[in-house]
Image (cartoon, rainbow, N blue to C red):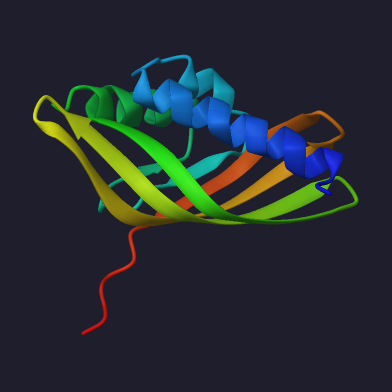
Length: 131
């Protein structure tokens, strides 16, 4: 059985992914809190303040593809109001000619408790294939 923290954070990650797919700028408010940092998988995808986060999503949403996450692995640990997440699955890139899937890993930190968790860190990576 999953914990309340895991259920709440799964919903939070799902909501973020849905906003990403819909190109919904409300994603900035979904993620942002003072001290939050986003480190994306591509060079230059770092946002350290709210304005930087808004610029990053404006740039991403201007691309001819939309993105969403499909995580198959979701490992969460929570203690004393802090939760650490490692999720692994795919970044789904959808364009007019179809969708492609790319391996993706997310490491995230949240603070809070119960049903109320706040994003503190989003660190994404696209693992390289074996050499």
